[in-house]
Length: 123
Image 1 (tube, rainbow, N blue to C red):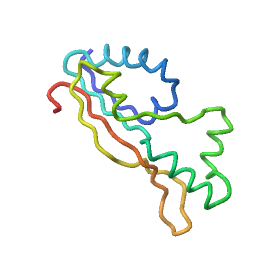
Image 2: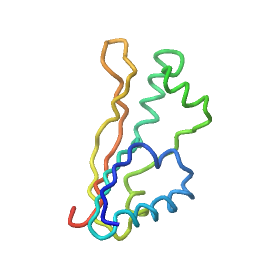
Image 3: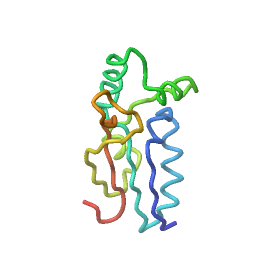
Image 4: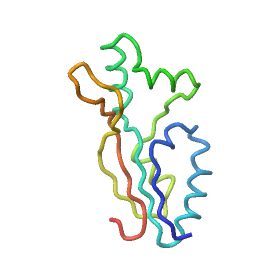
C-alpha cells in the first residue's frame, strides 16, 4: 500500500463488469496515502476517431492494428471514476492523448481524453 500509480488508457479497454476487480487491486496499492493518476479516452474520442477514418477512408495504421488484434475500445466516463473509487477524493479534467499519427496538415492527432487524480485531499 501507499504507492502512487500512473495508468494510461487501460480501463476503457476492459469490459465494464471487470473494471471493479482492477479498481479493488489499485485500492490495495494506494493504501491510505497513495495517489492514482489515470488518463482515459473521453466520450468525445469515438467521434474524433471516426472523423479521422472518414477523412482518410480507413483507420490510421496504428489504430487499424489495434482493431485487428480484437481490442474493441469501450467507453469510460469521468463519472465512472467515482463509481470505481467511491471512497476517494477525485479531481478530473480534460486532456488529450498525443499519438504518432500525422494529420494531413502536419500536426499529430490528439485524441480527446480526460484525467483523474485520485487520492487523499485532492478536492
